[in-house]
Image 1 (cartoon, rainbow, N blue to C red):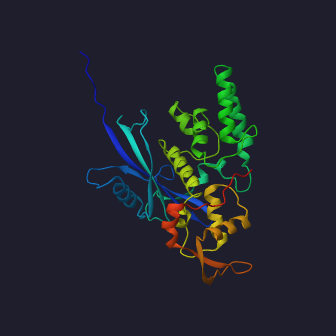
Image 2: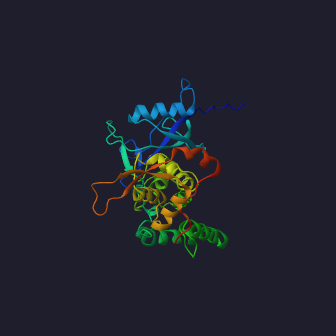
Image 3: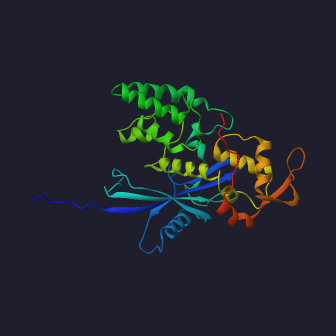
Length: 310
């Protein structure tokens, strides 16, 4: 008679908490910037989202604003130190950075610290052609047969914009997972027994960088059809600050006149009557988000100028 062993399962809640500060995308981290805020779901929590808010606020002393469920990570090989299987329910939360958290080992980080190949605001990052592409092509050439090599090459081309393919900023997760499969990120090498990839980009504990990639991809896609970027803006802002926030999240530059024309056409903002002071050059008008269009935009959608570029 075979004795069956019941493996325990733990559910944890993980937060991808995003802000934009001085034109840079930021993510709240714990564990000396190596993990996302996380904690177990407990029966005392009235809901998953309530549990998430409780854990994040307890760990970081930072209240959450806008929150939406992101994804449930339940791969069979996810386990804790005791060997229990771990299911992670992740959430994307948008807020504004409020300075120091007041908690040791908790702080804000530029999300391009973890994904330097995703920031194309000044053009394609040098790391892609200098390190990623040669190593990916080596990996492609190591396929078991011609068909496998062709499939690998096709994936590399689609995800990293090779062989004439366009760069798609939404494919953050697919790019990270390809690098993981090719053994080009530290998390993959840790799973295989050690070593470092040498590729720029800070690693994270467990699969938290994969969860962060999922959050970035979700937000990049969402800002194209929902006005969620205003959750990250102060009460009053200039159009340049708004454009810089969108560029920071999307990871690429936008055409200034096209951006302003579309914002005007969408009627998403209104002038406050004030002017920005303290900056060099001509004072800029201050705007605020028209909260009264939220319901209208939730139904009809809004579109920001993120058409496919080079």
